[in-house]
Each structure stands twice: as C-alpha cells, then as structure tokens.
Length: 113
Length: 114
Image (cartoon, rainbow over all chains, first blue to last red; front, top):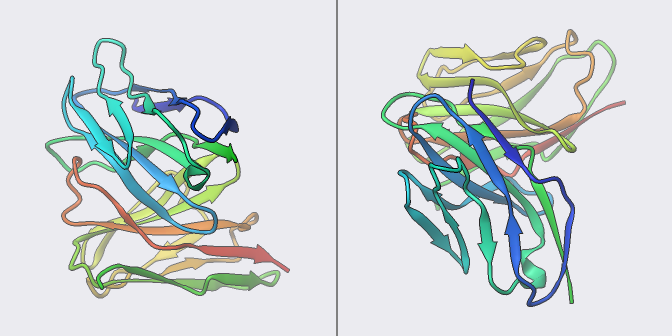
C-alpha cells in the first residue's frame, strides 16, 4: 500500500537555526509529494509540492527535493523564525488519476526566540 | 474571497445524540473530503465525494454519514454509533479530485463529548 513516514516531534529549535524534517514514502506508482503546514487551531495549508523525481518545491524559505532513489521528501529551511512554529505534514498522492491523498502523522516544530 | 467554511468551530455532543458538522465551499471544486485529526495520529479519511450525489467511504467511515446534494456543501453527521467522537474534524476540497492537485482546508471543528 501507500504510506508516509515522518520523524516524530516535537522538534525544538532556537531562532535562526537550520531545520530538517524527514519524510519517506512508500507508493505503488509515481506519486506527487506535498508538505502542508497547520498553525494552532487552524486547518492545513499547502506549503510546497513536487510532482516528479528531482523536482524541488520551495516556498517562504522552505525547500524539499523529490528523491526517488531514497523515496524521500525532506523539508528544510536555512533559518527558522518563531512564526514557523506549527505542525508540518508530509503527504503523497498518485498522479494521473483520481486518488485520495495519504498524510503522515505530522511533526510539531517549536521555535524559541 | 473564495474558500472553505466550516461551522461551528466548537461542538458538544451528548450521549446518544447525532450532530452535524457543516462544510461549505465557494471554490467551485468538484471533490470534497472529511478528515478526522487526533493528537499524534495525523489525518484519517472519513468520507470523500468527487461529484454531486456520490460519495465513498474512507478508512474510518463507521459511525459517520454524509450527503452531497449540492456541489458547494458536504455536511458530516456524527451518529450515536460513533463511540469515540472527540476529535478535530477537517473538511477539504480539490478542483477535480486528481492526484496531483493540492487540497484546500477549512479551519476545522472541534467536537467534544459532554
């Protein structure tokens, strides 16, 4: 089946530190990969996505590269801010057809001033 | 502004009671989804609909029901058969339901049992 595995949180960092949140996936076929972010008390919103191998998604200083050889889509940011504190979800969805997205369990990020 | 509206933001259910969570979208999207979120468990799919008057069960449909009589509306009823309903419920939509599309989410409803 299809699944997404994320590193467990919480991840606690000081402001301006480097962030990595690991995400690996298992999929039958060729998935599109997504990172969503959820701020406290809100719904999820798309942060970035990549639709094929070696694509890099980027937004608001966050980046993730679709690595087919390692089945990974790790989220990175060079310098985090307190406002980045949120829960981050990795997700996959099969391209080219009707398919319901599969989400990871989410990783909580806490950034201290 | 286009988006998804969920209501109410907080809802309390008494023993044996059915409650209905509202989800409305003005994005003209074909596909709509309901997810349940429990702490540390991520999102689990309850029901989804890719066209009016049609819907499919997700991974945890037992104790829930939905309808899709209008394109813009996808209400979720939590029935008395759902023995552990306390959770955060998220409604989402996508343009056509194709795999590479992003989902748009509402701001959620927190359901608690009295």
